Length: 142
Length: 362
Image (cartoon, rainbow over all chains, first blue to last red; front, side):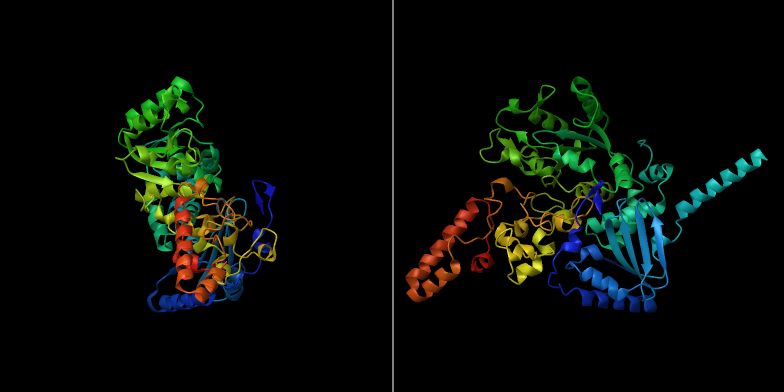
């Protein structure tokens, strides 16, 4: 971990164990409820983990319980974003990092595929223009 | 960025993908404590934003607020958002100075009359205008003149919001806040010494996206200042269990227990430090083992010692209570008087005391 190239201690790793907040089990129940809603109504659900007080170690414990499933994707979006399907299909862990690889956001998404993983219409349009330019340049040089 | 282009168009031109923009919107929504369902709303509104004009005035300040925002992390997109606001005048950052700089300010004021955002950092000397002038214009005159045509004012930092350190006792310059002088414009206070850079960016994003944010009783955006440091502190469970550090090197300090008895102002301080954190989200003062100073609250510098507990009893309340029980009503009245005196003293020094605080044994 570094701030502008300056090494800084990993406070999270050295933090003492705090008593649990008790939010872990309710979170798992929220995920269970969201999965049921998705199956019954196709309703997607997002949980912002930064919005829920968790004691040091509790988030790790949550991630451990969710585990990793079949899909893991790393996106390069001005700093990486890592998207993991947990061992429960339809439950995704989306973690955004800054360019210094510090976490800037972490979400649990209950859906088929997180929106950010899908190709975006604007990007497809820009890509098409690039491909057309490339082809017309290639034709011009032939 | 051209004034005619939207933010979305500018991002595309600069090769920023839609995914990257969505990522920025997701992390910003999280920072603003908005529900994730608002992410698409932020994205669709923000991408249509056209460049508003901003005039930034710096008065009695240390430049820490400007330093903080210009070091706002996650460079590229936040830089672009910051680029989106046209800094037509920023005395500290702009190359021009003196008459040329003042000309830029006057031009921006005329061109965008009634529509520009005025950002102010630093307090304003109220007693003698000569304490702080820019190009021969007193801070007060410049503020009143520039505020007249502003759509809204953002008072950045505790100095602009509440008077800050220049206003600290004995307040030699008679420093006052922006809201002490301006009464007829919407003012958003973004206090902190300095404010968290991401919060400043977030306030600007919120302003560009939804207009004036919801404010608390001190004019602060509720999204960032709606909860106390104490409420979001990861050491809160120790407070609830009555486990406190009593010195900076005792067992409690080593085990990371609550810093309340070492003067932590977290319970009475409203800011986003515990959630957003500092230095690219590395940590915040309490995580580094130091009590919160309460820098986003009015008159924090004069609120007693930084290291005096908010409700530290002047005597041992627990023991006094036992003696009162045995000695009867007279001693009970004495305890009441002692607590009232303690409360009056706390009020005088701007501390907040609740019945729960007074009930708590040392």
